[in-house]
Length: 110
Image 1 (cartoon, rainbow, N blue to C red):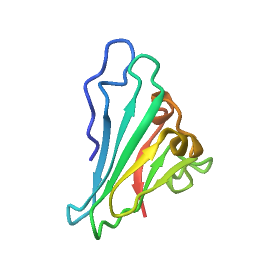
Image 2: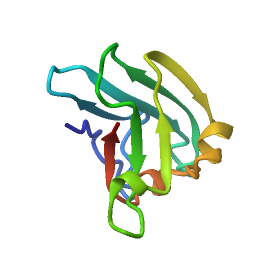
Image 3: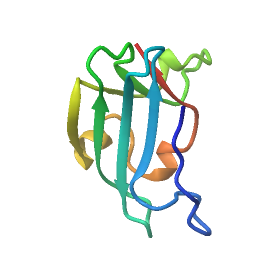
């Protein structure tokens, strides 16, 4: 399940924050809320959330060269609860701009 914000004309990014959420079979959630500069698309921070007991522990951005999301080039490990992620940590996993976030498939993984 993916929550999408309405598109901002000309960008496709929507209004900040951009929220991506998934649920497991027991409706336990994992999500990320990404704040960004609406003019440039540059990521400023994010907050991850993971319900206790959620089967998913990672958010995967893109797919690997083998086509598998498990080998995605950009991965964020989500601990239980809410956690702030500054722009520098997003950069460390290769996510600098909304174009990076929206460039490919986004999936939750174990």
